[in-house]
Image 1: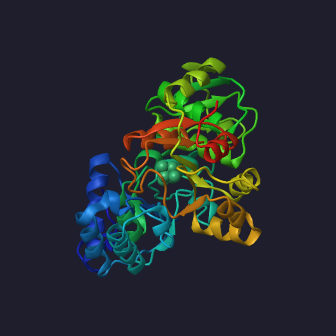
Image 2 (image 1 turned 90 degrees about the horizontal axis):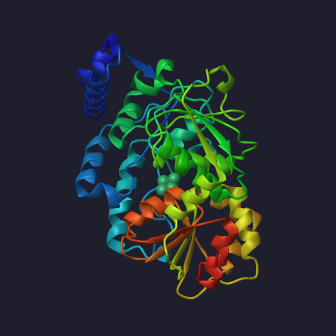
Image 3 (image 1 turned 45 degrees about the vertical axis):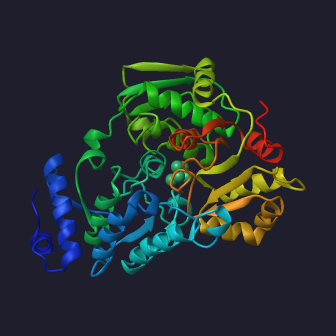
Length: 399
Ligand code: F3S
């Protein structure tokens, strides 16, 4: 990879240890993937925030970088392993909380904005069309590429952090237009009537378009919450973190429709539900907010929970960013939700919190949430927000 004088100086250590280490990481990545040069990025989103995934070795790595490392561009974080304020009410142990706080302290010293969310685009980290960014979390990466028309690879935690310290990333993969050409046409012949249908659609397209870039037609309309749910699912179940959806993706009409075609019928959506849903009736955890809830979703939950109580033996988590929770506080939605016995899980989510073996069963709106919760040994049910609220107040899955 060709470096400018300034970049070479960073690699030589002129800006200190963190920048030198970062340049080493980026130069190695660039060489592996055949990048010719580094390009400027507008923002970074760093994953690998939960102490549950980092462990002591990860914490030590961050601490070393935090000695002299300062980010050069707007940098936000993926969810942490706990609600940074109300971790006790989510049943997190003091030992875990202490370690998680050390992780967050290290990120703070680096100048990173402590907004732990997989929906950075809802809280002000909103890239422009065509802008190069370096994001990590798969649903956010897919949203940035496919809904906003920005350009990002799916970064690992260390490469995202390295990019934040340098302000540049190696130009390869999805930063290059030549690698952003759709290679399978997906025709949707199915009605999407509830939020979880988008997860089911993502499941089917992800599996059928494995490691390809889908060009999707036939979707009549899509709102922001549906798109973020679809982004999470389609990449979890197999496609590249980029799709073109006619009527949604900026510039989709400029792309040539691929000749290879797959069709998604209503029966495919049913197949997705059949595969995602386990045989379970008693629900111990209900979690809505994968990806993190928007304020609109929180208002819907509040409306559905009004005057009801979460069943004994069941927990209901509303996973969201702290910013959305603050809005929910102002609007009174949070009070309604908490009066019903549900809990906000800000800054965290069901996949990165230490939940292994804690709950036996989960109800959620999210296909991605089901994928990761199965790895935490939970049986899963996926349905609408209404079905999830119903599961929370009865403790049972009824459909
Ligand atoms: Fe976000 Fe966690 Fe889901 S990072 S997309 S809420 S698994």
